[in-house]
Amino acid sequence: MSVETISLGCRLNFAEAETIARTAPSDEDWIVVNSCAVTNEAMRQTRQAIRRAHRDRPSASILVTGCAAELQPETFEGMPGVTRIIGNSNKLNAFGATDVMAPRGLLAHVKSFVAVQTGCDHRCTFCSIWQARGPSRSLPFEAIRDAIALEIDRGAREIVLTGVDITDYSGGLGNLCQRLLAAEPRLKRLRLSSLDSIEIDDALLELVAGEPRLMPHFHLSLQAGDDMILKRMKRRHSRLDAVRTVERIKAARADASIGADLIAGFPTETEEMALNTLHLLEDCDIIAAHVFPFSARLDTPAARMPQLSREVVKARAARLRNVASKRRSDWLDSVIGTTQPILVEGNGIGHTDSFAPVTIGNAKRGDTGMASVTGRDGDRLTAVFA
Image 1 (cartoon, rainbow, N blue to C red):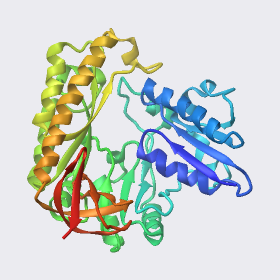
Image 2: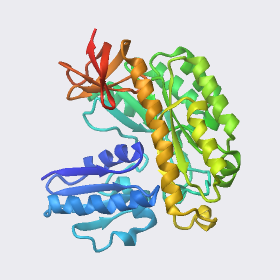
Image 3: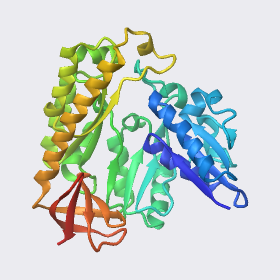
């Protein structure tokens, strides 16, 4: 018997799925689908994953949990193989776990995701995740520290702090990172998941400037580059705030790379507004853009706003992706001929500290060190250890 996990969406889901799997009965055959509801496409992919899982392992029982199961459980009722549907509030004790907020990482992975926080207190007009995850709740420092120590004991070489809104961590994300790095000297590589740019604090910027163990890639939840659209999204930052945040990061560490989430075709978006978002790619030096065509989520204010046609939404998303792809290609090319620190995560594949994907020959899982970047094969750099 075995337990398979299928996680969609955010990195927090990956960490939670492994926690659920470790508590499953050893004498039963389960598939755990940790669902996502951030877009309608994510909902479709969840249903598709369930159908594929049942087709591949028809004898297994399927547990569906996560945000989609929390918001629309009826969607999965009656699907072949689905025997249990559990929302977010009870997901971590689905098989009898005792601590619903217990942080966990991915078992026996070189890179482990550790949850520090869940839930969200903000009410962006396009988002339903706050309904699915509830209010913001931070884990105690001691629990996070112990979870990281456990993952390092299991062989993790890099720890990624994850959550729904980790910059909302109680006491400040920068303070948390400083305490973790001081408390666990074995922690050589600390990476952060998506950040709300307006909440980046001075303590975190101090680490960016002077702590080599903090990986220099920062993925920002920007969503748009036009002030009116940001206001209608109920975001808490302006376009200028985003640009200045990136300037501060780059001033602190010149080799930092910037990623961002961006939404194309938000309701009421004019061509001029869309171009402001397009130009944000350059103004914030974004080299890893996650572009989402606007998708109206049920019971959100944005769903009640005047909608753009799907053709316009798709065209603007495609334009954003095309420009973002060109910027990423140029960035990858700029790394060729340099020497970069690299962590090999498996099968000769890894990432540089700035999160450029790399194929590296004759390297074992878990290897780390300086490597010479020799070229590019598609969207991956090629390298050899120096």
